[in-house]
Length: 320
Image (cartoon, rainbow, N blue to C red):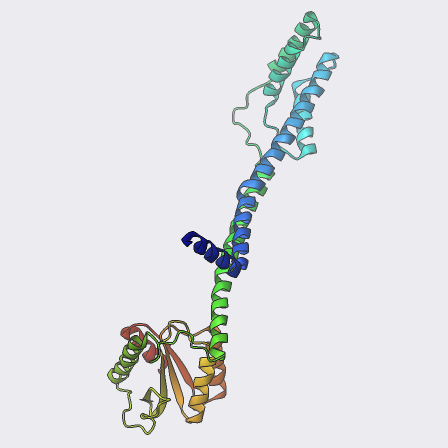
């Protein structure tokens, strides 16, 4: 029964997070294609071209030698250069190495009489005598297919990184949107209020905020609004009274919470400070910013912090 419940939980979680799982699979596929499939494909394609060029070179040079055509080592190198240009590759053998393999092919060919094979081998030896080892080896140009493989691998890493960041950002935005919808529908939103199991924690957090206001010497205890059940605290800053409301939520405050507080401050003809233990969503912050642009005298500040020091620093920064 336990395993069956676990399986149901996994299935339900997979359905709820299908898009994220699908996106994650896409990231893995991108990395696989960039790091394994494309390099292997490019390598196979390069090897295939090398083998094709090598077979054609062996066949062409064998034919010229077999029919006693006048040929020099320079001619062999010219044929190699032509094949490289034709197939857009860098041939992996030198002219000396190619002639050695052609000689070996003649030796293995039992359909050619032995006397003729000896003559062909002698011709190959004469060609090899013309070869001179360069004093400084000529570096061959970099293989363009290796560059393509490296470029694709790098791009795949970049795309996979961007996709991963996008997944996390979307997941965060979805959670914020869920909070916004919940707060707009007057959901409990996991509030730590007097009716929840977190009532004690909420009370302690609200008490801590009051202590911070007192230590900053901005707590006004004799205000007419102090006894109002809709107002947690009244702070006096630069001669102006600000409504302070404390939200000790486990989740960020949403757009609905921001609207409710803005309506409260407007009805009281005062500015305000919304203290959110877990912060505010982007939409809530954007709504407050728009409110502040339209209101010169009733601005609202959002203060976030979990500890006393964090709340105090946030208050000092917000009300400067």
